[in-house]
Length: 250
Picture (cartoon, rainbow, N blue to C red):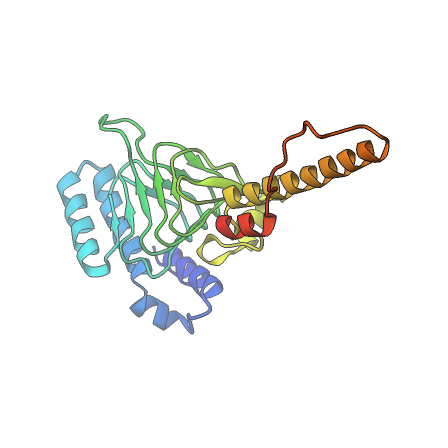
């Protein structure tokens, strides 16, 4: 137990620049307290002491503001940063080295008892503040979920998901698993280039493409007129203003 505790403290100091020393982490980090109390609750739950497990979980929620069902499986070196308002459901599985920020919900969408209702987080996954991951699917190894995203389907390993509903905006298939888990850390699930809304990016590209096509059509009509081909029957339009449309999309 003490080896696990030392391991947890060391991982928090490594990942949180605000952590100054082990004593501060041990005494002042509710995420660590919630994880330790969950281990007690889970131990009771797995041995048929259901009420005892739920009661310890209830005490942990009151003390830390973090609710982890005693039936949930939590791996090693999991860091719940700040943590207030985090909810982790009964059939959730949190892999080693995961990072979870405040306001995260790992929730279920099914009422079937005994079924896998809550998500599985692969090793090294990062779930940003306020994100909701809902359903019995997998968030892959090294994946990142941006703040306030609502994820209702699987996120591939190494990908980044943002938005409501969440969209995949980055996938680095060539990254080694060890780099994606133990070495890569992105605060709040943010990585360079992942802050853009994928739908807005697609609309910007469509607008630019439409403007380019309009210029090409005007050039073709001018060439036809220079060659003596009359284009009087072609209806005139006001054209599009790409700058104005791009501002509307922003």
